[in-house]
Image (tube, rainbow, N blue to C red; front, side, top):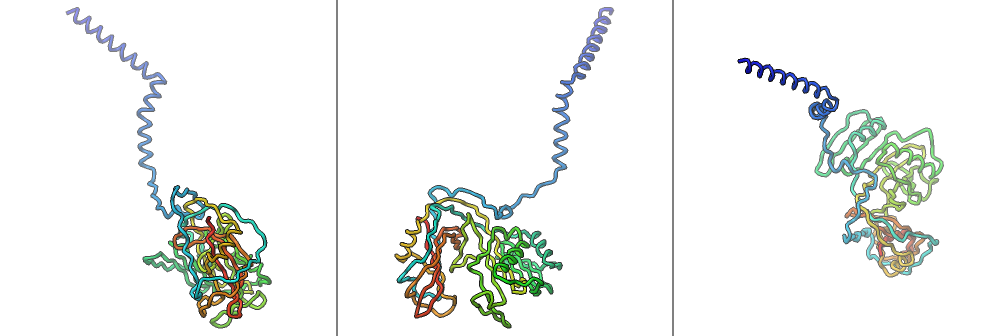
Length: 365
């Protein structure tokens, strides 16, 4: 009996000693840190994950921007030859008796190549632009198979955005200001300042001084005239440049934007296509200028503009052609590929008359 009692007392003493050891261990800073890391931290992480708002996944179109995004074209991928169209008034694509009166100039020996994609217009930014142009009413929204269209109309005029394709149009019914224009240069400055309203979609657009046109307005019609002093309306075209080279489209046109302005300084109309995102990049060797001229003489160029009347009477091939300017540019066709071309411009004679002429020549060797 006494032995059992002693054994019980001894066991109790051992338990008390073990509890004291446990308390001593639990009070150790290292043990407390380990318990905090393995018990408290996971609980806090779980709570924070439950409180964190979900981030919506953005679609691919949202990431398109006017900023070039270099992605190398896979080695061996064939570069598509451009589709160059001739104007409908041209009977035969043929040049005769060619001469060049072009000052000596240098061209790069290699250029970068790009694929492009439209830069869609953000609806919120469209509303901000409308507000800055004093369109305070709610827009009319139309959804078609091809695009989503937002339009505003009031006594000030009309503003239209084609969100998916990146096109916009602005018409003003209040076309007078207190700052009349005295020269084409002032018209270009005024037009460029006004385009800042459409930022960021108007970035990298530059006026094309050689393509500025002048008109004399009459009720329901515009008559083209030769210079600034004869007309009352100026069409200022803008081109997009990539690596310093302008982008041309079909039929000898490089303009992506037109700003119509009158001599009273008022903006009449703006038609703007956003600059396009560059989504691929490669590089290729370019013809020398002497090689380009030889190919023109051998008939490898394509006439893309011939005469003033685009839909006028059909014209036979020119009798003589004198090219006075040449530039290296990009051509954008239906393939959305920026292809380097030489743009030759000058005067052609046909049936005793002089006509403007523009010829494209693919520039890759």
